[in-house]
Image 1 (tube, rainbow, N blue to C red):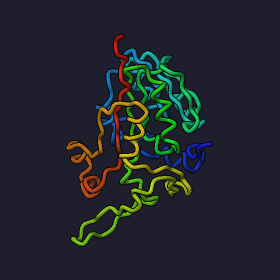
Image 2: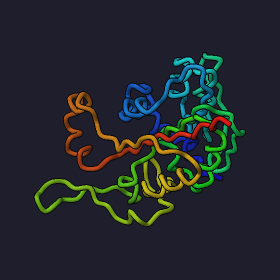
Image 3: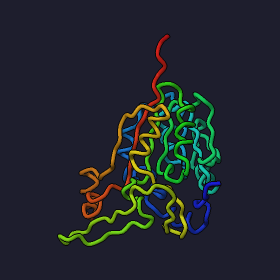
Image 4: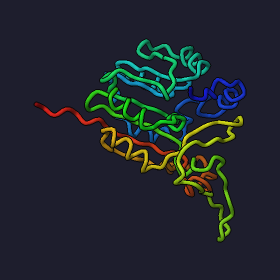
Length: 249
């Protein structure tokens, strides 16, 4: 069973104070980049993996998705998502992404925001998601960038030229990382960009786009202090892939 850290009262209280939790998608720094990778939503059957408080699921509903199924392991996050959702096209279910099985050809679009780095077996979920998508369907997801996530505890160090540099170690050593983030002992899984792309294309997906996120000019204007960090290392990795459409017989 995957670690259910989001139902830990201390963790949930701390996470709830982040702007992305408190103020929705508009306060999520990588949201404009994520949105740019999405296809048209109208009339699509959408699955939102790791839906959390449901902000993305509700937005998808507002964009006239035929149906949106938000899946998360946290009962407490799902309870808030249900409370804040009024669109009958948006529903929620509890699910463990390490074991989740979706019906074949049951979705036209699968999205996941900052959840798949908690999944241990990336090959299993990649194959399952490929089967779950209808031909021509799309997978769009974000994770912690592997450069950021390679070390269990990210660290800034002084470079020889006096600037701050981001310390990278064990990038090619993939696997379990235990970090202290809000609470101690949060388990995540590090894998390289190459590993993710090779697994996804090996499952049958066709590569569409990758975004190694950096702030926009507007975001830098609003947060000038970000230039000291966000131009040195990427924090988020976003990917868009498609399931090839069936050829006409």
